Image 1 (cartoon, helix red, strand yellow):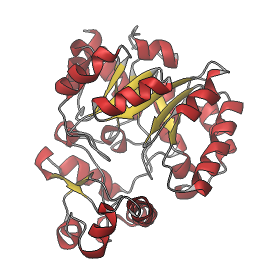
Image 2 (cartoon, rainbow, N blue to C red; image 1 turned 60 degrees about the vertical axis):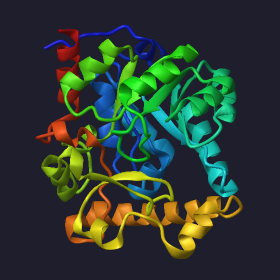
Image 3 (spheres, rainbow, N blue to C red; image 1 turned 90 degrees about the vertical axis):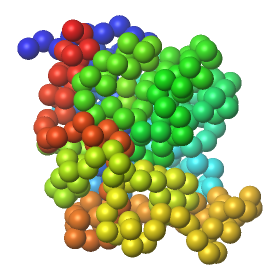
Image 4 (tube, rainbow, N blue to C red; image 1 turned 120 degrees about the horizontal axis):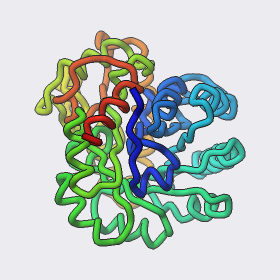
Length: 329
């Protein structure tokens, strides 16, 4: 069956048919998943850390494999702008150059000032959408010259926001930029709802973990199928700021709040960036191990409250086509 085509700011900017973004996820953004989302008419977002460190691929070669499998349809790249490590920023800058050389023109930035990204991609006609959780960050992103905003609400996985989808749109929509909804969309009814609400599209993460193409451990996928919205809790122990994960015996055992020296360092303006870097590096290692070994090991299974609407593992393309048909109807 033919996939309906849409006309929104996101479809025009990203040059796609369906305004659905397969969000970048560590370690779940393997090249097969990114390619499947793009090939189906949405857009898969490359996560360099996932491709290079979790899946042991050469970044340029991985992009070429994705482009081939996606039959040349557009793909995107996630650019983290965290300022705590010059080595990391230099590496991200090189990855950005490679992506531009390989034809990537849609970028999702997060965690910092995206000005340098916008400046780099503008000359080749690239587009940047920036993750935001509230108006003050949206204003900074607008002033940096981004083309759109990804509104991360309180139902999102990963670094969730604090406001609901409607309240967040009401707050940042008047800034005049296209806004994509990120968080809580686990079924086609949710996708149709946010488009009617005025969003230019939707970014899905958790829904795409429970797909046949995603390399996540079967225990991770099953945890998503089993979980309800109330099973998703926030923990400070992954990156130093609240991250949404599925509650488990391990999460209960270690707690969800930073304590002792870590708590003090996170509160200090001079040390909080270093503490967050430490947490992030440690969590990347933990996430990679739990993804490989499953629920029988120390694990954080990141997920959003969209788990409520997910009841089966299925191909990424079928999800995009089903969501498109429902929204078009």
